[in-house]
Amino acid sequence: MDGCSGESDSEIHSIKTVLVIDDEELNVKLLTRMLTGEGFRVMGAASAKAGLELLRQKRPDVILMDIRLGGMDGLEATRWVKSNPAFVSIPVIAVSAYSAQEDRARAFQAGCSHYLTKPFGKKVLVEVVRRFTGI
Image 1 (tube, rainbow, N blue to C red):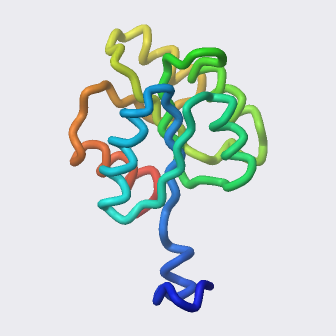
Image 2: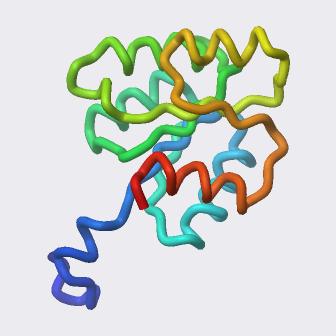
């Protein structure tokens, strides 16, 4: 515990961590602002590769995964998360501007727990993240 923070051990451990993986820096900043304002700790990554590296280093409570990423896309990254016994229990929430039923179906087949279609408001985002973090 950081002696200067004023937070107890139980407060520090009760803070839920969200990993945001999106190749649009503005989206990462926006989601970070919305979630930190509600008491979440947020880590951001601009690619699936960088996000999976953060996942290995600091296990988040939930992942917000953009589906259309350059390089490894969000569905491939989700399949990797769900095939790894160390991370399979972490909920992955798909985030995409694509709202077609087939896009949603592919996300769920890859292992996503929920699908958020952009644009969405802070209230919807916070409700979904709270549901999947158990708070």
